[in-house]
Image 1 (spheres, rainbow, N blue to C red):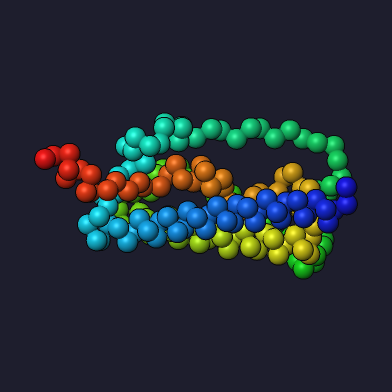
Image 2: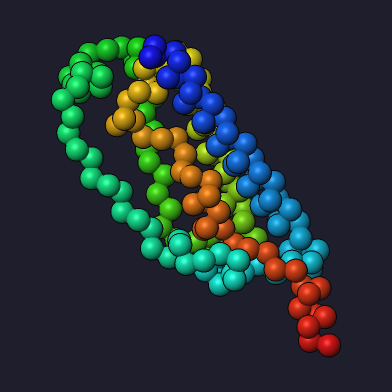
Length: 167
């Protein structure tokens, strides 16, 4: 399969992930507006009944096995190439704890979502110039799974429901 087709498949997956993160950003914005209006109470993701204990222990990444292929090239080959002939490489995103159930925690999460959205767009731009980057199995992804990310977010609980339960 030609590199541009592989790049197209990868770019499509990135675009779907981009849309998922835009939905997360919108949900965070709605959540942030509900708290000052006294409509929503923030609770930690681990305290929410909606989310299971799937995020309590993050799985360890599988060990990578060395491969005998020439797709990646050696580090000395990469150093000899001018910067404009190499794709940008990302630092991995590592979330180790939940965002705090405060407005600041919601804003921190929203900031991370913006960073991820920018990284996804930059990765798509990289693929237009370097379609071979889509086939590099050792390349760090510009984002984490939006579904795993949601497990670290504070959850909103409607206050009106709590008031009606007490009566």
